Length: 328
Image 1 (tube, rainbow, N blue to C red):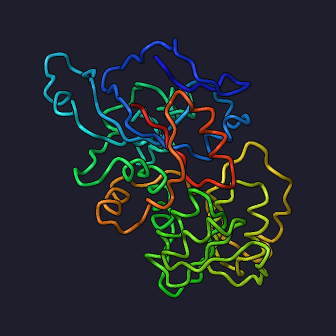
Image 2: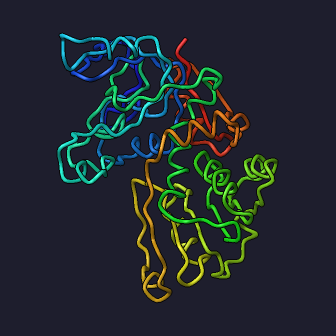
């Protein structure tokens, strides 16, 4: 089987990987499209110490299901041939986090393409049926593949209240920053996207979102909410200079190397610091189905799985926003 693996040293495409085995309750999925994420790039720098098949953003088709009970395969059969997206955290359902309703923080979880579970940059991969969401027929593959990162953007408004009058700044004009800005603009009338690339900022501006180049920003410690999507160790420092006292910073950035940081302003200015990760797939699918967000302009390249290492390089380039892998 062809797939893109990270071996602890470098990413490379291999053709001799064994086909995945599905455990009871898991489905075998054939991806149709997959998206390259900043987390994939950070893993290739050593983030999470992961080795294995990369990738966690996908839309695909269920090809097989391994049932929990061999006497009743009706539930599994209902999934066969369905077009799906899938949540990336695979949980035990028994630990203290799971029983509190915090399955995304399961003590025993594996995470697709990130923690102890091969990812979706492969001709086939396995994921629990419980993680799957059926994609509405009228949502094209090119939109459905954005479900996972869009759900992460939606998580912000699940964690904190955002009001129409709030002043909001999103730092980072890349993949996630663009989605966060669009989602937050559904709640606030005062969203600004800050980035380093005029071409990327123009994509958000076309949606009516205020934009600023980093070089033109003069931090005044006056923003109600700042969201760090920079994928840079320096993002939090900028956020601390932008947010007002008793304001809120949401951290979306995960990086392999963290820079030393003076955290005293968090105490002095009583700033609320919120970590934010995975989010609600049902909400994201509804937004895509209703076309409340526009993902088409974010797609800047498509490459076949055989050229996946090139896709990683292009995704890291400032000239690209979202690079997709195809599986024809």
